[in-house]
Image (cartoon, rainbow over all chains, first blue to last red; front, side, top):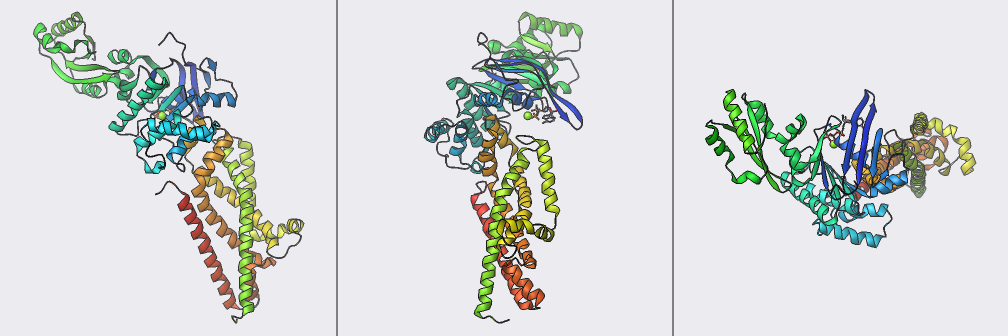
Length: 335
Length: 221
Ligand SMILES: Nc1ncnc2c1ncn2[C@@H]1O[C@H](COP(=O)(O)OP(=O)(O)OP(=O)(O)O)[C@@H](O)[C@H]1O
Ligand SMILES: [Mg+2]
């Protein structure tokens, strides 16, 4: 993937908002390369700057410094016509779906083609194909008010795909949906990525969304990129506090509970056949307390993590750590 | 007061004149008010094409016009009316001052209807590369239609109220009848009849436009 030229490059991107209470820095020195055909995740807590970042990519928000380079063209300082053309190559979907309430499903999907001047007949045909792809062929005459959240998001996806974009920007696209519907929408996005070769950029505050579909991820924290890389790598070895917080999730609360030293052991699917903990107990002759354990599907491989409590005694603790090192299990001391 | 054919004919003529005044001036006021309302929303600081200076000046002019009492506007507009219509008497002559009073009011009504349009939907259109014109024609107007129709019910009935005042300057219509008989000749019965007819007309306009709004709105059902 990385041999190709990036489809989107963000260079020293910054965005400040001038408000009555002074200047708010929403983005600061953001550098990212996004490659054609990948599903790229951007995760961060509320207010981190995710929406601002994605809105800068299609210039809905004009960056105050740095540049957005789309297919080798710097969008900075370009006229409205160039920006509009770039936007047509980047579909966008939203948390609140943003469908036109006075148009039915078919008319909604035809809308972007109307804007770009596609002949009506052709537009209707393409809209029907897209609605069939998202599984709404029997709801074409329905109005948005008559649809469920999941159905609305499917319409929005069909609409975003109408102009054959190369990139699909998804700002919290599943945050208003229940877990089951979320799964279906994520599968649809994955299918669009695989079958149509569309680069997908997913903005979310949920690690589960990243794990489910993303190839690479950038963690954004307080206007900065804290870390970025392959999802499996970030998952098994988060380097920043915010990364650990987002990945540990529920486990983080467990960490806060206990008083003793704790280790986080990461299983990346290879050693799942080996009884690591029983072997550890037998080898080190020390009991360990399992505080938390879970398995997740990260990009198709089963990845697990476990929090164990280790004895206060320094020699016993050292013995456990050395044992884990010798059997080459990924782990880190949480505290 | 006797219910002979002269009285009935006079009332029918009054109704006809009133409806003509109201609908002709509503139409003209909307032709002027809708573009003004669009400019107010679109050129706002956080509008889709911010031109704050223009927006502020237009807003100020509209407020000025709206603060002039209608009866004063009637008198001030006399020369303008004579220039446009050729006379200052009768139903036709009342249309220019009615339009002058209603257009700024309608501009504000239209502005508030457009402001109700979901910002997210406008953003979605922008993300698809829509031009400012496309957003006005294909997003703002259609999405605001139900609200614009509710606004029209209020605007038209307000214009009807103004038109009744035209009686004082010989403007014709039901207002003239009410004033001539009720006020100058103390025939209160005739005044009541015209007032009741006005109430019925207001009711019919209100109901019709609310119904139109409801039928056109795809958010309910
Ligand atoms: N138009 C604006 N004017 C002023 N400040 C803004 C504006 N838009 C965003 N901000 C500020 O920029 C920061 C980042 O906002 P942004 O919406 O990008 O966060 P986010 O990560 O998308 O959060 P959430 O998960 O809640 O959607 C916040 O501090 C916010 O208050
Ligand atoms: Mg956001």
